[in-house]
Length: 529
Image (cartoon, rainbow, N blue to C red; front, side):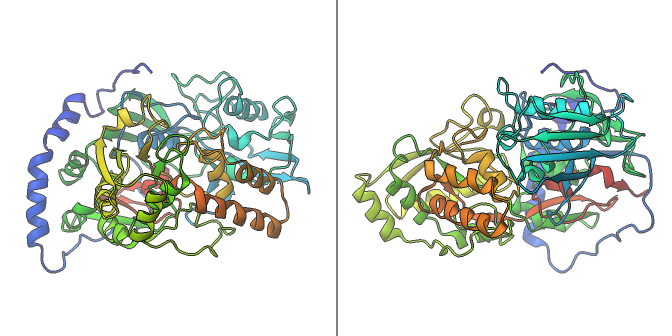
């Protein structure tokens, strides 16, 4: 995507490179702080009083590359996601406790069979260009996401929609008819990648309803946004300008915060927590989440096309050590299943424990003793590269040689993304059916394990169509058991989200979604004078 140019007020390319070049010196100093820090640091007081207006908020976000996008419906990297939250709003949203709340829609209701849904928009909504948001825009957005010829991230989650049967009942009301019952539509409407855009939307000149308007965009470098003065949430946003800067390098991101070039960063490297905590003018923001950093095994290619190999790899993992060593204790142990925040999660399955002897036995039975594999890793999220290193050490005890291949973020999410035989990734909190639709069905947009299990698929589809919650829980329990027994994910733990910001930044809070910096909630952040 072509750059839209750069505002003179935004940090320049030269500034960006200076942040990166500054890295080695400050981390060296940081190591001294870590080694000698003793006693409690007297922290600067948190500002109190009502929110203040004005100023420019500068945020450093992990990752980014020349493939960065402003497309409302195709975010991949953390910077993509951060931009989506500023430019666009969804019909529904998740609150800090991961409960669905109204957003652009004041109500979303279904008939008893979950085959007909009615969406009622708030009154007086406007896009950035002043155009009123109407039912036709909602229909256009849903059709764009689910277009079979060019499906976007949320297409599978909206696959039950009859795209030719969507109707505008009046300017604020949409009637949806489904080809099959689907109780997960509210989850889909709350997904950050399913924002509402106007008829005629052009991602090269993005227009949404979000708290900030697009000003300038340089893929792989930075983005500048200006306040949407006609935002539908009363009083928000508070800052006049927002700058999002890509930082593929952890060192550069930390030093930009320590040096005052940015006001907040996401994904604090655990090895530098004490460095940041030793600064009286910085605050750590920690959230317990359902986010996960899986290892991904392609089940359709050797050696992982043999379920015994997949089971062996799961058994070599010391999950407690992973949480201690990779997360510094800032997280919880996983059981090779996602969606622990889902009320219907199958918690009855036994916790998988490390069993090196059993792993060796399975590899012998599979004819894969003394196996050598390549593990592709990248700093796509805090802890990913460290997890690869710890896994390689643990796997060696079972005679497995893991050759780590580290690539940059751009290459990881490039042409080979979703094709690596053995790799890693990151996911935010999602409920089971929504997550399965995103990554565990044959037609999922991010089926990185190439999982295609007929019974699992049938259970997921039946659960989506089941309005009886008790029955739906039974179906999900069986589906999760199948994935626990033979799936391609190693889900070793759920990291707490760790971000950091200047004490001047007020309004961010813990958030169970796992999306950094309070779901990139810069609309409700303000700068104390």
